[in-house]
Length: 240
Image 1 (spheres, helix red, strand yellow):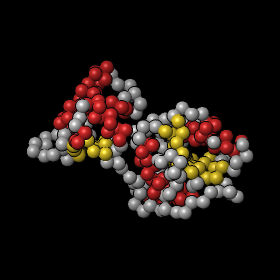
Image 2: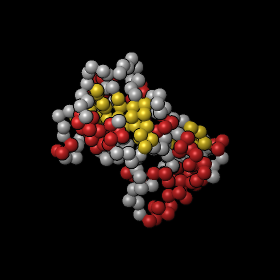
Image 3: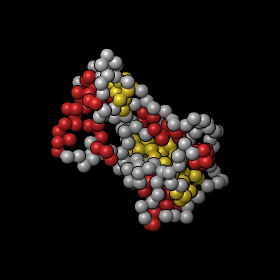
């Protein structure tokens, strides 16, 4: 039985092995992830105690990265032999590995994917596109997952596609085309425990420029499959 820590106290699984699988400890996400922000004082007091009890009581703790596993082992004094690193891959049924070539005599196509405007850094992506164009580069940006919060982010060279569901054939095909036709996957996330969307980019052999944050360096090999940009960098560094 695989559960998350919050469900564990509700389960009656006598004589059954229970495995907890997550992309981070909840304590790591306190005040960062949307579901772990603005918590009351009682929840804050109980969070680590409850999570620690859950992790110590299960058969195995599975976490998607070394970054998360090391935190769980240290924070809750877990036996390292009970903590396994099990990354998630691309949620793509038919990956399309294509031969990539450096664009020289054509427009540069950037792709950004995220369902939260600020946390996923979509504003940084748009500003990066604008700076590239101001420097004379013929660059275009496709954004999937979110619409701009107001009209100031609308741009003739940015296409907002909204949320595209992989469960809808036409939308899944459209998303696949965007991954295939892009030159660079832009991922300036401000808070990210893992970044499964980076695995999707890899499924299309698409190089990425992403934030050097948490588990992302375990997915993106800096200088090989992409470039990592320090958290908090200004737009000029992203454009560079």
